[in-house]
Length: 381
Ligand SMILES: [Mn+2]
Image 1 (tube, rainbow, N blue to C red):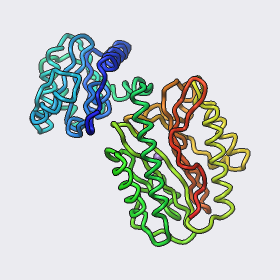
Image 2 (image 1 turned 90 degrees about the vertical axis):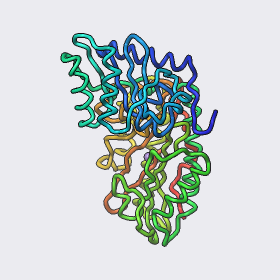
Image 3 (image 1 turned 180 degrees about the horizontal axis):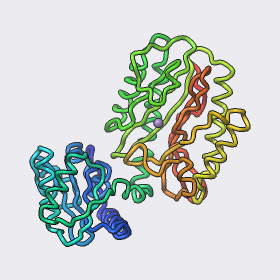
């Protein structure tokens, strides 16, 4: 492997293209236009940040795919991309969308249906207007989440990256915990974790480092702040690394000083619920079953009303990949070679604070294997 580069094996790439085309057929899409970084990496192998930000893939159901990149990036694309039909575009967004429309024109046909993933509204309007000037009947449909079902199942190569990302985040957690002391700011703790993860090879941050102390543990997304840690503060640390483009996610709850009985009790409930969930997680387990076993533990321990409805998510090229582990997806079954992160949310007890514990696990035919290895305990400093 080169530095910050992933070789997308030809056979894996072909299989992904063919699976994407099956999904296109199922959804009545003739041409797919992809802008999202993770979709670009998945269907072409590119990892360069500029290609991720400014690249676009045009994938017809029949015929060769094209990748449109900034003209300055053509050489990088030639090196990184399995898609070797490369078109250069100028930098302004409208120029770029007109170029994409030009590539699309090759697939003009009466009633052609174009699927588009995440795109800014203004840019979408430019793309649509320019394409419809030559294909007035073209239909555009939202294909934002279409590839998430494909990205869900990980190849061996992808699992290796996820394991490595998990290992790096263990080191990040260790560094964060080492930095905990009365008087340290949350940002100082986050900085130590991020520094350590970069030293261990983490490419970037896709998971903003959350460090929440005291009352801030009651927040949902407590990005590390200038707040100083006080004596007996509960501290929640939630972070992740990125390796080969793949994310990890780990969270621990700590106390700097001494904990109270409710905090202990709450942590034990969360730990038991998480362990129970991992114990039943394997091929065929439904999201309903996971939710029920978790709810049961909270009920038994008298914390039913604090039970969060969103308890986890899949993880891969993105931190949170669809489908979310929540009641509306109850019937979905876990498949082998998917990677799941549990728990997503804190359990909040207004007086005691928010307690959070999160680890990622690989689902197999017979069990789940937890990939993050930092000790799963209430950490006392
Ligand atoms: Mn997390």
